[in-house]
Image (tube, rainbow, N blue to C red):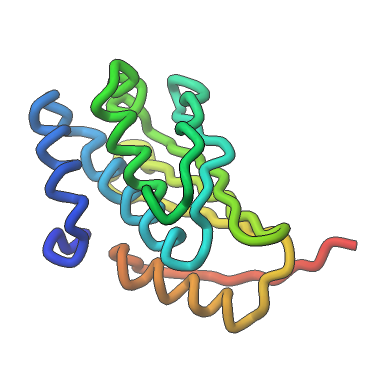
Length: 157
């Protein structure tokens, strides 16, 4: 799974989940934290929207300077609040992050029905050079147990 030694925030996330006796979705939340952390490292640091299914939209994080708290910190704060039940019962987590200029990343992490596998879809919007796409894919590979990855390219007119 995700190597806890490489991601220090997972210790806090794991303790919050254990306090609330969340077991089934624990891996989904750990993976989502890893996705948020990897994308933050690639310049996508502002949470514009996020939601869980079932449960719906989550309140947007308080506006802070991106250097003060990364998106996974907002996730930890949400878990510490009364909204933790929406996160704990989720089988899908969607987030829209934005970076500099018009760059945006839409990520959807889903738990596959009746399996212990997950799937991640990531769409990048705005001007993203091909070397940045490879950097993002490598960051996700560094933080997630990726079995298969497929990169498709599209240019919207």
